[in-house]
Amino acid sequence: MSQIIQIKNITKEFKVLNRREGLKGSLKDLFSRDYKIVRAVDNISMNVEQGEIVGYLGSNGAGKSTTIKMMTGVLEPTSGEILIDGNIPYKNRAKNAQEIGVVFGQRSQLWWALPLIESFKILKDIYQISDSDYDSIMSLYQSLVDIEPLLHKPVRQMSLGQRTLSDILAAFLHNPKIVFLDEPTIGLDVSMKSKIRTLIHALNKEKNTTVILTTHDMGDVDALCRRIVIIDKGKMLYDNDIAHLKGFFGSYRTLKIRTDGDISEHSEQIRKKFPEFKVSADEEWISVLVDEEKEKVIDVLSTLQKTHKIRDMQLEEISTEDVVKKIYEEGVS
Amino acid sequence: MNLKKYLTLTRAGIIESLQFRLGTLVMIIGNVLYLTVIYFLWDSIYKSSGTDIVNGMTFTDTLIYLVLATALFNFMEMYTVWEIGRNIQSGKIVLDLLKPMEYRSYLFWSYSGSFVTQFFFTFLPTFIIVGLVTHGAIPMGINLLFFVISVIMAIIINYSIDFLVGTICLYTESIWGINIMKQVIVLLLSGATVPIAFFPEPFKTIVNYLPFQSIYNAPLTILLNGNPEMQDVLTILGTQLIWCVVMTVLSKLFWKASLRQITVNGG
Image: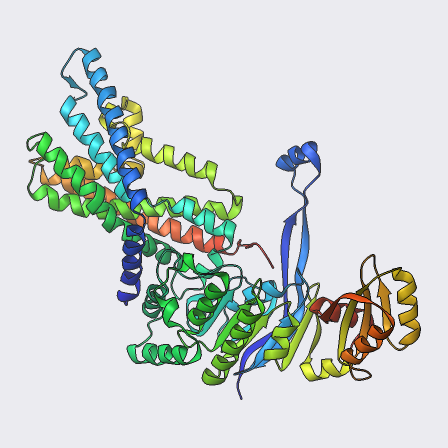
């Protein structure tokens, strides 16, 4: 298989103005400028093969978007090399653009005032998609999602979910080799999330498109990615199979319950009952970090129900932030 | 070059601008108000001057000139600075940069649809009304052809200046002040608010060496001159052509050099 993305030791530094505080400081800023260098991406290397879906994770401000912008050619790395399908993206932006598709969850590339079908037609001409390719991708779309009602709806009247879906379809329209999805499921409800995951999965399979996916939602990662890359503060923390990470974390879930009566007393009792799990409590909730390989969450819950009056409960997946934090604190073998 | 790729953007622009009927209506009303003010302003200027001809132009000449300048302004103004600035602030510029064509062309052609709608909705009606009201004070002959050529070059010069100023937004990350400054300078020095014939002498000479007068003064001078000397027309068109090339090259180079400065929000 061919290496579609090759990244070698890239670093990106930004010059940021040190702003001073208050009115006096702002006035001073007008005259003397004092810059500091911020290293957003620090010595990252990775290779991606054609057809892979890679989850690119990290907390806010970790440098994910910066890396993506360098891969798309919008930013030039301060040092290091990037090759996208053999091209240096920032030197050959227009050519690179033909080979990639992009979705930024927060903004849309579609024509706001026009019905979706018009946006597709414009993209067809801009990317010079042949009629037969266009027809075949449209019929593929039709088989994957119920696109008909969307086609004649102006983009500005769409719900966020419909718009994101449309944006993803638009990004795949010219059959790019790589699609970058920057937080595509942000702000969507559960059913829309799963719809979008199914769509991405199907398009990847059908077209063998490489997908680089950044997200904060471990659900996205679980559903789509076999490989994940985690960065934090610009540095690469982890690059391996998701199965490997799973093995490392076991299968943890956080069970949160709310009980009547004194919380600290209850949490103390629970701690005694499940000495192998971490139990913590805040003003409202008692959290039990359950390792499902040792005991199922549902069993823990039923045991608790016998002794405590549970008013409310929540089940939480481990979030990206937890993962990053844990890797950061303990390292990965 | 594949023209279809660009014309599709024109088409989109036409459809897009037709979506906003109310906006078009308000703009037409605004224009009528502006023109009314112009009429009374110059009416009193001419009345107080005591002569019929000021600086070689009669009241009718001046009025035709200014009305058509306004129509031309509505037709040519692309709000490029505004657009670039907004795209930078919202970060949408990233998506535009990722289209498989140059940003400069992409922006131009995205806006070009409005040329078509504005031509039919404001310029042509104004032109016809002025022609009817003044009983043929606008000469209809070969000058129309030169006028069209001149307007096309004016559009290119205007866009290049706009794009050049818009590029400055990459550095300042603010739009408003820059945009207003540009608009005032261009409108004044191009002869869109006051005919250049009215400018005092040394100033007039300076203005003639600047690119701005090629935007409004040049096409209007050509249009309003019924039996032009070929040499005069060629001088005007030649000057425009030179500015076309110079401004295009300048704005392209400046953009290229500036693009590296982009530190788009986020990341």
